[in-house]
Every structure is written in C-alpha cells, then in structure tokens.
Length: 596
Image 1 (cartoon, rainbow, N blue to C red):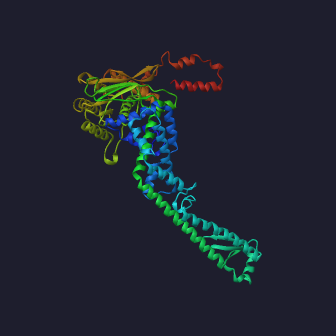
Image 2 (cartoon, one colour):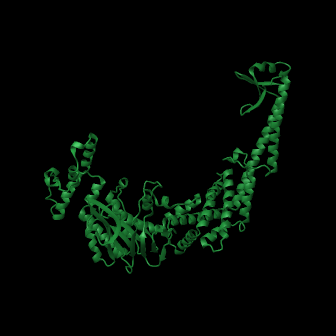
Image 3 (tube, rainbow, N blue to C red):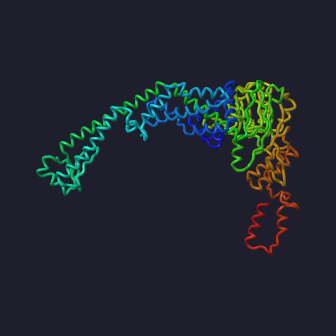
C-alpha cells in the first residue's frame, strides 16, 4: 500500500536471477491468465524443473551469469548504448546457447514452453545470432569504457585502418621521447621535459633558472617562448609543433574510426533485432520457470488442478507472505481448508466468516484470493491440494481508507468499493468482503451488509467469502440455499484470549472485542469499564439509554473487589517482607503492578 516492495507477495516468492526474468515474473503476477492452455503450459514448465532438481541448479547457475539482454538491446536501438551493452549482448547470447545445450541434452521430452525457449536460443538454428556474438566478443577489447566516445574499446587486430592510426600514435610518442632526449643533450638541461595539456598542446618545460639560457643565442633561434610561470618556463619548437599536429590527426582518426565501427556493430544487432528479442524472452521464460520451481520446492507448494466448474477446493491452504514472516521469527503457520462452489452442487457458494479480531479472518480471506492469483499466473500454490475453476475477476473489499481530496469519507469509499463488486461480479468471479457496513450506525450497517450478502448469493451467484462482526447475519445461512457459516476459533484461558487460527464450521459464539482491546494495550481501567457496559448490554440489549455512561469506575466497587484466587494475593502470600532486599522489594512492586 505504501508503494514499497517489502512484505509483498512478489518480494516473498520471486526467486528469479535475471532482470528480464524478474520483469516477466512481476508481469505475470500482476496480470493472471484466464486461458487454460497458457496456464497449464506454465505449470508443465514448473513441474519439469521441480522434478529435475540437479538440472535446475545448473540452469540457475548459468542464469546468474547472464546479463540483461533485453535492456542492452533496447539501449542500442534507442542510441543510448555503449560498448558495455555490446558485451552484454554477446555474453547473454553465449550463455543462452549454453542453456539450450544443457536442456536439449536431456533424454526426456521438454515441456512446450521450454522447448520453444531452447529453439529460440539454439545457435544451430540461429547462425546469424551465433555469428553476431562471436564477432562482438572478437571486436571488443578486454576493458571497456562506458561511452563509445571515450575510445579504446575495439580490440587490436579487428580493423586495419584503426590499427594503422593507433600505430602512428604509438610511434609518435616514441619520437617525442627521442626528441626530448636530444633537446636535453643540445641544451645541457637534464631537467627539460616535453609535456602536454589541453591549452598549449605539446610544449617544452624547463625550470625557471634554465629559462634564460633558452632565450639567448644560440638556442633562441630554435626555442620559442610560450609561457612563464613562477617556477618554470615553457617553450616550443617548429619541429615539436609539426609532430604535435601529426599525433593529433592520428588520435582523431583513431577515435573517428572507432565510432564508425561501433555504429557498424549496432547495425548488425539491428539486423537481427527480432531474434535477439526472442532470445531475451526465452531466457526470461527459463528463469521464471526455474525460479517458480525453486520456491515451490522450498515451500511445499502444489500444482493446482484446473476445473471446468466454478469451484474452489483447497486442503491445508496457507498464506505465503504471512507464513514467510512467521518462519523468520521461528513460528509456524496454521493451514486451513476451504471449499466453495458457485453452482452450489459440491459446496456453498458463499461463506459467512465470523470470529474475533486478530483471529485470522483477513488472513483466511486473503490467502484464498492469493491462491487464485498464483494459480492463474501459472505458479504453484502453498497447500496440500487445490482444485480451482478459473475466475474471470477477483474482487476484494478490505480495510478502511478515505479519499478526502475527492470528497469521499471512509464509509463512502467502502460503499463505492462494495457497489463495484455487486454491479460487476459474475458467476465466474471470486469475491472477498471484510466488514461491510461498519462505517455507519449499527442498524444501517447491518442492513447494508444483509442486503449485500443476499445480492451476492442470489444475483451475482459467485464464489464469495464475507467476513463480518454482525452475528445477526449468521442466520442467513439457514435462509439462503447455498450459504454457510465458518468461524475462526479462539479460547479464553486464565482471563487471556488464545487465538487458535483454525477454521471451523458454524458461527463464532462471540467477538471477544474487549479481550482484543486488552491485548492492544488499552488501560486496565478502560477495559474494566468496557466489561461492565458489555455485561449490561448483553443482559438487556435495549438498555443503552439507561446505562450510567458517566459513572466513574470507582463507583462500581465490585469491579475492584479482589477475588480470593487473584494472582496478586497469591504472590503476596508467598513473600516474606523481612527477607526481601531493597532490589527484590522493588521487583515485587513491579510484579504486583503488572497483575493489577
């Protein structure tokens, strides 16, 4: 919701190793398929890598060394690429050929998705692609600059004209070194140096104390004064100027030729653009299938069975994100079953889910939706088994939010979302609704939730999970032919609420709201007052107006009368004050406060 990746389904299950694979994986998860053949083909590829675990490891090791072929290709086409993008294309094509060889060597037949990928990467079927990779690796030097204009990226021996320019440049530098040595001998100035900068070009540099000697005959006829600095003087000679011109022209010719060669290589890539793009997609397909199998293997996920009927039958279904978070803390996840059938023939089409807050209602609803998304994205589902009729859409109305900038209150947003579901859901849709009607008065909210349940059941006729705290709705399970009650179990033990997180048939006996408030950290005084009000309301529901709402808790002495078995009394009985040290007495005081 905050735009980050952490804590999302994608971050939890994405084990791809290449950038194209990561993009394809995210795209599939965000746009699940409705075509059964496409989904089954993806299942086949995942199943293959799940069975071939050793091969999967080898394939993933190869993928890890594969650059982003698609990104490099795109940068070259947009004229934003450089020599390193050429290297990336060559390496990716070579690694793709290795993958194709690795997969094609199997005796067993490949699934169609992987067979197509091997065909796209096989160098024997794409000789122009293989030749391009070979030429790129031959043409490029070992160390490459980021930009082509920096030069030095074409290997020696690739182009004759470039080699000649480079040879002239290297020879000229040798001549400069020889010229410097001669000038030192002629002038007797051993500190004389020939240097270069972008302002003067090549120049002769001598310490200031030797400058006068060059300004006087016989050297004044050869050495031309250019600049005087605090500690040295700079000169030039006609011979040095001529040599500098030849070196400059050689460097310019080499740079120009390298740019020409770079453009020629880019045109080569453009000529096989479709084959390069297909190869990039093939690498992504292999990466996604191997990554999905790796995650499924580590998390006991199973292949869904796609049904023609609009059913949802899952055994021991788990929420992948919540389970991963619990594993990180050393805790386990409680799996649950779910059975729905939009036709009502095999199971209820709508389930009313009740139970206390924090018991797992939202997790139960959302894991069902995630199972549909995973299954229709072509991925395995964390469960013992799952049979699913393909959904045309998934609708969810969960949480509370507002859109005040557009004039929508929290309740208005809730109603807009509910309206979209009731107006658009079909018999093939999958719907979850969490706490419809809670943003208004009790009777208004109950009436809206009641009508929404009836509309989903009678008009939309879709598979739906409807979580609510309105226990009056649980009676609808008896009136609606294809509705049922489910509840998340919780138990009270020594005045503490224990969430069992497992689903049971039938409605919850109570909401345990006050106990959850205590767990949330409400002050003990406020919790006791809530318990008093709750008891009065449960005893006489119509007595709201007669409640002493402004009465102090202190006026209810029975609330403070300690029971004989109160933990604080037991603690005091076990303590001998005369034997306590000051530190132990202070610890005792804190313990008594906690038992308050």
